[in-house]
Image 1 (cartoon, one colour):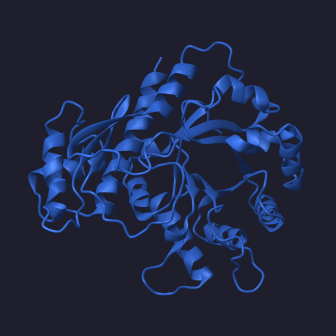
Image 2 (cartoon, rainbow, N blue to C red):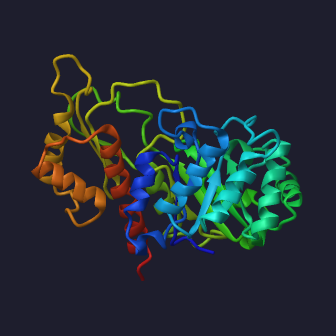
Length: 355
C-alpha cells in the first residue's frame, strides 16, 4: 500500500534499467514500486537460442538479484501472446512459479482488452499468491462510454475488488491532449477504494535526432511539470495519484534497429533533461566512444551536476570524467542516466511533500 509520496517508474527490464535498480540505496527502493514491462530483449538469454522456460527462469532470477523481495508490478503485454511453456502452460503462470522460488513479490499487471488466456493466467496467479493484481488503463480506455462496466468485468474475472487492486492510468506520451488528473479521476469508479492509484506518462523524445548539433541541449520534463502543478495546490482532487514515468526513455516501445547510437548522456534536473549530445559512435572518421568521457567532463563542470555521491550513476559519470579509459558503452551510459533519474525523482517527490 502506498500513496502519492511514492513513485512508479515504468521500465522495460533491459540491462541498463535492471542494473540501475540493483545499485539503488535501500531507502530509495522503499519509496518506489517499478512496473516491469517485459519486452523481447528483456527476456533474451545471451546469444544462444533458449527455450521459453529458460528465458523466464532468467527473468525471475534477474528480478531477485536486481530488485529483491519488494513488490514488483510485471506486465508482459509486449511479449508474443502465443508463447507457451511446453504445450499448454501460460508464460505468466510459469513466471509466477519461478518468482515464488526466488521470493520475488510479483504483482501481475492486466488491462481491459487482454486475451482470455492472459486473464485466466492472471486470475490463477492472484488466487495462488493473494497479492492482488494491477489494472493498467491507457488513454484509449478512458474514452469508452462503458468504462465502468469494462473495469468491473475484469475484476469479476479475477474474483477481486478495488481494495485488492492497484490502478495505474498510463497516458503514455505526454502532450497537449493529455486529460487532467481531475478529468481522469472523474472517469474512474470507486476511486477512493483502490489499493493504490497512479498516473504515469512520459515526455522524453523517441531518440536524440531532433538535436542536430553536438553539445548541450535541453528537453523539458513536461510530464513531471504537469503532475507537480496539478497535485501540489489542488484541493478538489478526489484522490492524489502517485507519480509514474518512463525515465529517460520514450513511452512507446519500438524494437531496436541496430542503430548507430550517439555518444550522449541523458541527465535529469528539476524541470528538464540536460542532453549532452555526441556524434554517432560508428561514424567513419569520427571521435567514437571517447566522446562519452569528454561529455562527462563538461557535465561535471555544470551547476546541474549533483555530485559523485548523489547516485551510482553520478559516481560513474564523475569517474569517467576523471579516468576516461575504458570509455564505457551505450548500455553503461544509459544505466548511469537511469540510476541518476530514479534517485533524483524519489528525492524530488520526497522534497515536495517534506512538510
